[in-house]
Length: 88
Image (cartoon, helix red, strand yellow):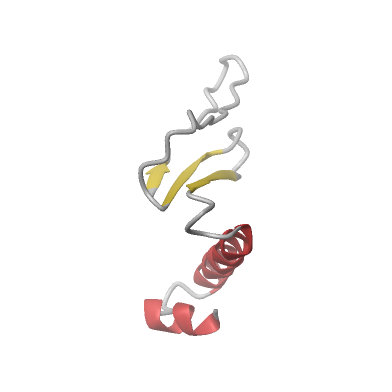
């Protein structure tokens, strides 16, 4: 997983939007990249995975759990990782 928290919003600068493209050469079963969206507080999440190893249904499940972790973690900063994992 790569988390790239660099903001794409520069005060007074041009509007910038990031896009991520795979070159198709996947060397790991799953690789996840999370980037700043467009400077408005959103995140962009990119999944690169070997479809012969991981199904698209599994990716959807991982994404659902990740959103749940973020939402519940924001609501309750004292929640433990174990408690978060128990939610999925």
